[in-house]
Length: 102
Image (cartoon, helix red, strand yellow):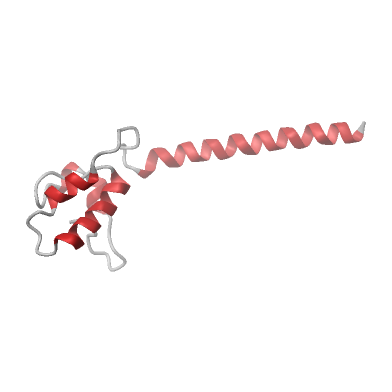
């Protein structure tokens, strides 16, 4: 009888931990992309090619832009500026506190 109660208690604890883990994942997913988590994924390659077309170092620009686009699901329009359109893109920095995203 004690084994039966122990089994039921362990199953209930496991279900509780699964529910807590799922709730934690849901709350983290909402805040990561800056309100863009519900939007469909954008074409980062095309958007970054447009953004970096006038860059003196286009491959470096596209690599950095691609990283930022993957995190934010957003690339500001134009070849520079317009960072107010995509706040997540504007806030990503390097280890030296310089803007990472072109």
